[in-house]
Length: 187
Image (cartoon, rainbow, N blue to C red; front, side, top):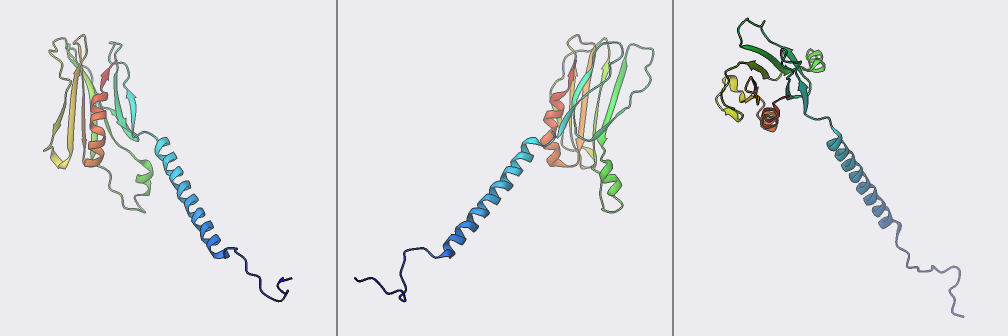
């Protein structure tokens, strides 16, 4: 009968509650990191594309169209001149950054619009020779802009399409110029 008296303290092998609290805190922190990572991945994979397709109206009565990628949020303006009576003609379009929300908030928050443009169009001529479909870069373009261009001749050699892309933001330019220039097609 060596049982301890009720007044004596009984030793047990139970861990103290403090390590349990640390473990719970560690698990909560790990769950928070996992949730933030999942939200970041969801945004990354579902964010809207940086470039969107744009297709011109029918070019003259040729049943042909120009198709090109343009940066999301840029406005496209028709800059074509009236057609002359000769056999040469041109349609041209200009796109530039347009962010109405930033423009409206510019009185409260200082905002400088981006110095950039995208010009594209087509020239009709019965005497087109060759196919210049390579992308050309010009490193010393005025105003510190990065510049790239591409010209493309239709298979029937009756239509030449072109795209000129310039942007001051070098990171955005380097990320997009190949996609924009190589997306130029005549349909």
